[in-house]
Image 1 (cartoon, rainbow, N blue to C red):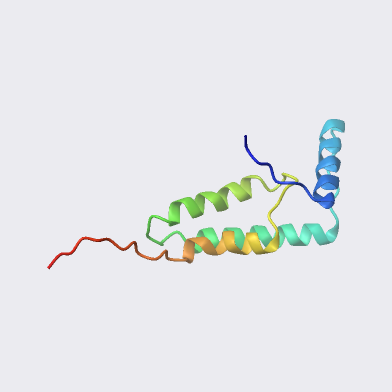
Image 2: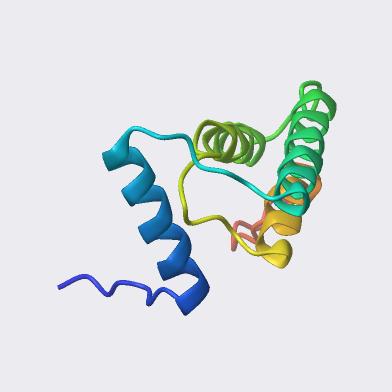
Length: 106
């Protein structure tokens, strides 16, 4: 059985407001603070995508895909917190450590 993450009260309120607005067919009204935060995050995500185009490595395509998925799902009520978002943006630029092997080649 899968373990589901618990929503905080703020997430529950946002989710219920969004679902009620969708059911009524009215657009969700966002505050100026929310609009500014969303605009800042979109700008940062697009900048990370643009900077990561020329990067090479096995870790880059999945990281770029996760940023694209974030941009596609901007209207979902559950959004990552600031620390998770910062990590999401920096993942394409973090080079993973090389795996050590036991092969001894002389």
